[in-house]
Length: 342
Image (cartoon, one colour):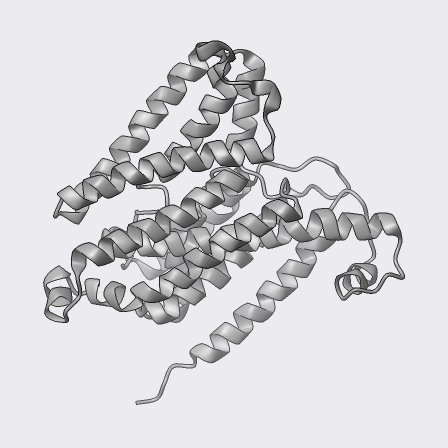
C-alpha cells in the first residue's frame, strides 16, 4: 500500500510557517526594510540601533509567542476532542481558562470588594501571570479530584463546564462592585495579547510550553486507542484512568500557561484540529499533533498580522481577529465536507 505523502505536507506547512513568521515581524507602526529585518535576525549589527531594538525586543518575542500560543491551544483542542469524543470540545472546556481569568479578576477587581488586601497599584505582567496561574491550578486540582471519582468521561466534561460557569459568576459579582477603570483594565486583559512579554517572561513561558509539548508524545497511543472506544483501549492494555489524568494535566498545563501570559485566545483550539484533519485526512495522532501545532502557529501569526493596523501604533484585539477571520473559513470547509469527524 502506497504511503500517503505526509512529508510533503509537513515541508509545505513548515515553509509557510517560516514565511508568515517573517511577515509578522515586518508588521508594525515603524516601517523597517525587510532586508534589515532579516540581517538583524541573523545577527548582523549594521542596522540602526532603534530598528534592532524594535525587532529583537518587541516583534521577535511577539511572533514566537504567537507560535507558542497557536500551537499549544491547537494541540489542547485536539486532545480534548479525542478524550471527550466531542467535535465541539476545546482547550477551555475544563474551566482552566476560567480559573485563570478568576485569578486575574481577583487581582484587578478584588480591591473594590476586599479593600487593601489586593493591591491594584502593583499590577505587572508577572503579577498577572502568577494570579492567572494560581487560578488555573486551583481549578485543575478540582477537576483532577473530580476525575478520580468519576468513571464517565462526559461527566468530567460537565464538571469542567460547571467550574467555568461558577468562576464566571464570581467574576460578574466582582465586576459589579468594581470601578470603571478596573473593569476596563480587566476587559483589556480578556481581549488577549501577544506582544507584552519580555525575554525573561518568554523563557518561563517557553520552558513550560516545551514540557507540555514533549508530554504529548506519551499519550499518542492511548489517544489513538480511545478513538475506537474505551473497551477497545482496555483490550490493548491501556490504563484509561491514568491516560485520562495525563491528558487532563497536559491540557491544563498548556492552557493555564498560555492564558496566564497571553490572556484567553478564542477559536484557535476549537477549529485548528478540524483543519488539520481535513488537510491530512487521518485520525492518527502521531500525524495530527505536529500538524495541529504547525497549522495553529501559522493561523495565529496570520491573525496577529491582520490585527496590526498598517502604519499605526494601535492593534485590533487578537480575539476579535481569530473569530472574524477563522470562523467563516471553518464554516465554509465544513459545508464543503458536509460532516465533522473526531
